[in-house]
Length: 44
Image 1 (tube, rainbow, N blue to C red):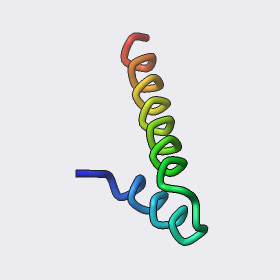
Image 2 (image 1 turned 90 degrees about the vertical axis):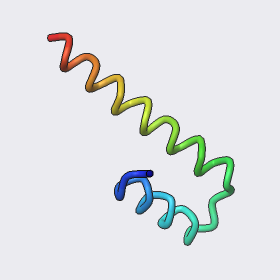
Image 3 (image 1 turned 30 degrees about the vertical axis):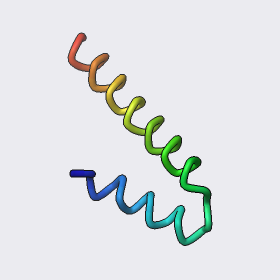
Image 4 (image 1 turned 180 degrees about the horizontal axis):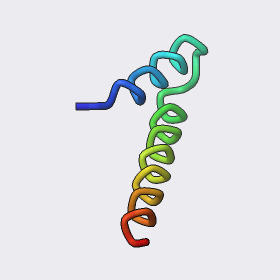
């Protein structure tokens, strides 16, 4: 199940007529960035 945050981003981008592939790529990078940030926070 996707988060509310990612769903709202997807809805926003759909209304702005972004391509599906672009939406998927943006969401991938958002997930990757959050994962990396959490991993670094936990390490310290």
